[in-house]
Image 1 (tube, rainbow, N blue to C red):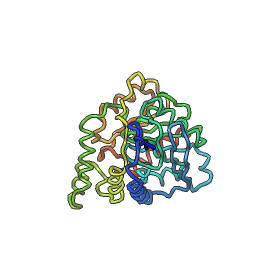
Image 2 (image 1 turned 90 degrees about the horizontal axis):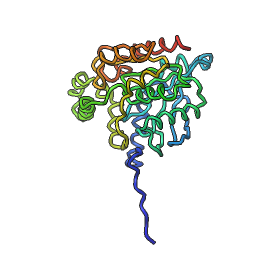
Image 3 (image 1 turned 180 degrees about the vertical axis):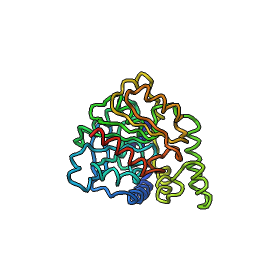
Length: 303
């Protein structure tokens, strides 16, 4: 009887092998251990696959009633990247860190979500599955595009949106991809050289051993199958009415910071935008205490 083979879909992310996946999970767990311990892990079934979520509860039971924070990580990573932020944020209110389907993590993708309406539907279904009807949404890089897209297409549950050097504002240029490849190459250099390269490239991954191992393991283990997201048009940005806080690294290579810090308040009424010195694409990692404090202050005024 002839055997049939199942081809891997070209529009859905996947792990190369179970062995490499398990190595990556072990590397992720080492990064999670650098931050606050999650008190629960949840799986939410959606039209697009199973979304894995980490929940961090506040120590003060009274804070459980506050509007929760939902975290969306950057491309090629998982929710472990929030280790510098989970303790401070969850001291104030519940926090949910989502592994985005299509990126390495513990979510399982079955259908693509890179199209804007599909991405908004996926996140809406995830929030509903978690029982969250009001949230403060925080997104970094690709997660910033997801958050911005949600504010445009399905803003109903959003009390606020915080964007950390996000996608969605400009077309991703060659300089950003060159920076990514240079950072990946630098992870293989000797330790003495890595510290210099970390400062030059604004890449904290190079000097945090657990982060370095996680990123290298993820590149080996997982195949991302989606195009870079297109930026929102000015007309689309003008539809946003959710309170918005934009944080850009002064040396960002994803966007032109000065251009966007002037542009977004003009297009999104009441939005707040600022540039953080001494950082590039990871302000919430490079200056965690400062950014945590500013994000909490922004959310405090909104509930």
